[in-house]
Amino acid sequence: MSAIVLDGKALSRQIEAGLVARVAAIKSKSNGVSPILATILVGDDPASHTYVRMKGNACARVGMESRRIVLPQSTTTEQLIAEIDQLNADPRVHGILLQHPVPSQIDERACFNRIAVEKDVDGVTVLGFGRMAMGEFAYGSATPAGIMRLLKHYSIPLEGKHAVVVGRGPILGKPAAMMLLNANATITICHSKTQGLADIVRLADIVVGAVGRPQFIKGAWIKSGAVVVDAGFHPNAGSVGDIELPAVIDRCSAYTPVPGGVGPMTIATLIEQTVDAAEKR
Image (tube, rainbow, N blue to C red):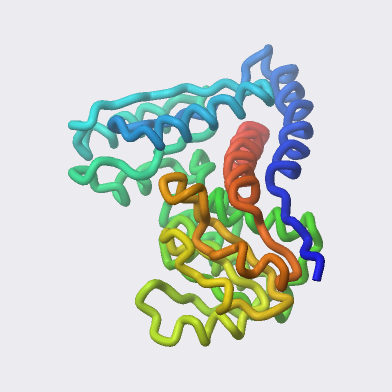
């Protein structure tokens, strides 16, 4: 079986190419004022610094501005909320990204929920999740929204299919499940403590790896012809994902490579949703 490679890197480039003209149109209508994505980075985690830099580079490629706020490791919840409030009140800022994770002394959920829903372009607020789950408008969590865009681009059928999402995180597993459900797939949500996980995964037409553990989902668990979506990335484990891809590539019908699959779509979706917010403004 020759599997379809769900190439997120190629699609993200197409999305960015389309955003260049949209950003230029926004500037022409606002006396040259550019859409702005504000990123908040707390602490000195090297991976987080890399991700924020990549997002800033993507903004530059489409002609947007990025505003980077870096706060010390000792930042409190109250101090972080104060920064978010300032960005909420700034009409020049169209999107706000709080880089995950934050230091342990911070109430991350309280800070996520402080972001104004109209600027929640990373889809992390409880209100945004609730609206999305109920089929109302909200900016979807960037990674699962990017996955849905990738599946649509490659015409992967979802209606009536059984999708097993392995992972229940609030900004990946849960929203991915709700988005697939809204697309008329039948959903099973599993996690690392699910009993009989291998047997459940074997039933899936679509497998989404979102558990956050290197190659936790074994290729032997996945039935022939399934669509394999790996949302994990573990550079310290050899740049692998959550799924044992080499063991299933020859048997699946489509798969996201790691790297180059889901990751680029996350950033492209974040930037596109910021442009959407600027157009609405």
